[in-house]
Every structure is written in C-alpha cells, then in structure tokens.
Image (tube, rainbow, N blue to C red; front, side, top):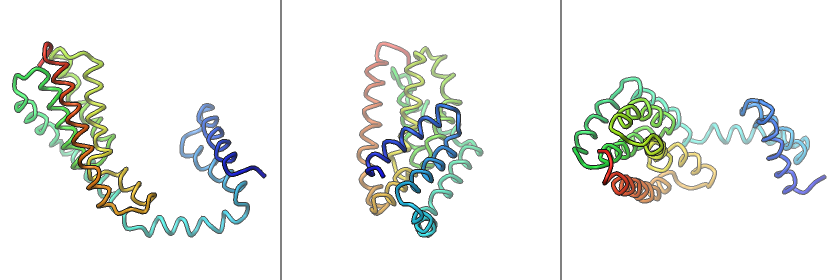
Length: 204
C-alpha cells in the first residue's frame, strides 16, 4: 500500500500515459479514476459511488449548465452575433486598433450572455479573423485577441466554470459571480489598453 500522495502522482502519470498512446480523454479519466480509486479505497469505492452520483445529480446548481449550453447554441444558430459584431465595428470607428477593441467588447458581451467559452471563440474566429487580416492586423495579434476575448466567458458571469467551482468549493454561486465581475472587467480593460497601444501606429 502506498501513501495517498503516491497514488495521486501515479494516477496523474497513468492519465498522461493513456493520453499519449491515443486513448480518448473520457475513457482515460474513467479508467484511471476507477483503478486508483479501487487501489486507494478497496471495495468500499463501490459503496461510495452511488452516494456521490446522487449528490451530483441532486445539486440544483447543475440545472443551470444545460440551460446555459442551450442558450449559447441558440445564439450561435440564430446568428445575432453578426449584427452585434457589426455594431461594435461601427462604434470603434476609425480608432487605431478599434476593430480589436470591438472584438474584446464583443467577447465580453458573448461571455456574459452564454457562459460558454467554445461557442464564443468559434463564433469570433469565423466572423472576425478574415476581417482583421483584411485590415492589416498581424495574424498572431488577431488570433490572440480572438482567443483572449473568447476565454473571458470563463470568468465573466454567468460562467459554467464558476458554477462547477461553487459545488467543489461549497460556496454560493451568487458569491462567486459577484467576486468574478471585477476581475473579468479588469482583464477586458487590460486587453483593450494593450490593443490600443499596440495598434496606435498600425491598422484600425
């Protein structure tokens, strides 16, 4: 029998080994979890699983996740993002780096309405990357602005990540949402200032 810390290290190593040999992520997680859970807890693991599964399913917080995903998919399929991005572009006007600033603001609004990172990045990438390149933006800056603004959905409420953290940390979802608003907006402001400084002598 090993110490719990040793099991944790071996579990991490086993997970990465399975990923490297091409095993899908879901199967790797399940296999490593069951194997090392059985090594650590013995047969008592199978007595703990039903209680754990029921505790997850019974948590009211998880009801928000499919609803947020549904809202994000509906926004993506109904394509209001096109109109929103067009409005952002007009607001930016002829300011140097203004299109990049518009993308950051667009990412903030999409993150605040969907809470889904992947949908935001895909939408931004499809809609804005060709426009940024046509306007003379460096491809690295364009892709960086899109990825950075898309990932703001992780911290700007409502965020699926914050809902998951609230259950793990046993904190109120509202408390985490309130605590994340300031850092999220501050991060967006830093992105905007960076793009304005970087784009001052460059494209608009």
